[in-house]
Image 1 (cartoon, rainbow, N blue to C red):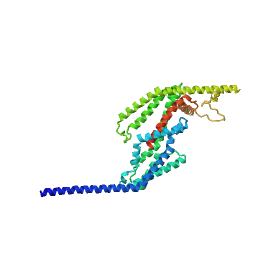
Image 2: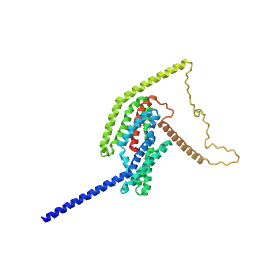
Image 3: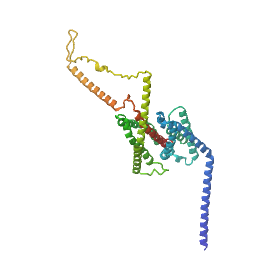
Image 4: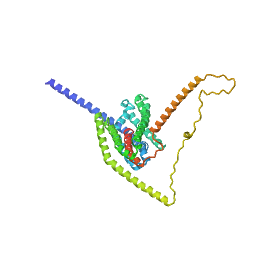
Length: 406
């Protein structure tokens, strides 16, 4: 009985000791967290303000780049550009931007080195926001189109160098980020050139470019929608549970959604667009005819001037060519030299030069045929067809920008 009582007492003391230690540990942790929050509360408020300033600067600089072409071409006005930019920038940041956020959060500087120095990390992130916001505002007022990714990466590297002296900086990740700054313009230019050449051959060079544009419009929409749906579904946001979607399911989902949208565009958008463009064309023709008749009443002569380019080379008479063996000896007593070897070498050089000239001419002809003609008159109806897809691509450009920079 005494032994059992001692064991029970010992067990009770152990339970009390464990409970006391846990209580002390929890109280210490709660006190430490509370103290930490009270010390950095001001920095949190300043960080939220700087985040809004950074978003303001991004909207003034980067978002304007995404919708600048659509506004500049007159396809949409500023009001609709603001509305569409707000919607698609937000969607891009929510659906696809998680991976980029994770890269900027842990990929540039090793945050584990700051486990025992949380205040340094907190204040460092505050300094990053402040530096990036200030530079974007300066660049915006100086009318300089800059990238937020460049700014935030440089600010993060600067913080890492000051705080840890380059110890926790992932240099290979920074090299890959910097390489993307040079690769992206090259790839963008290459892809845009290929797309324009495809449009030029499939639509603009046809006998009826307006009809060809209407036929190709659902195809262009299909590729654009399929690519963006795949970008969202494959290795997407972990918060939305899209990171675990397999590759085959992402491809299937993208193709199905793009096909449904393309069919809807073919049967709904294309007839409406065709009717709208043809109606506006008839009204424009009536206005032109009325203005022409008014000019005729006022006594203004309507003349059509045609210019003909005459190539002088076609009318030049061929000058007699001297044969290489035709040698005049103008001086008396001159020694006749055997020129057969020189004659053959000159003929070979002439043949090589002719081959080079013919190759250069063939290359020039191919280049003139392949590249778009500069003096080609654009078709207004075809331009109106592509104005709709220009707005669509501008929206997805804002979507991509929100996924990356925001």
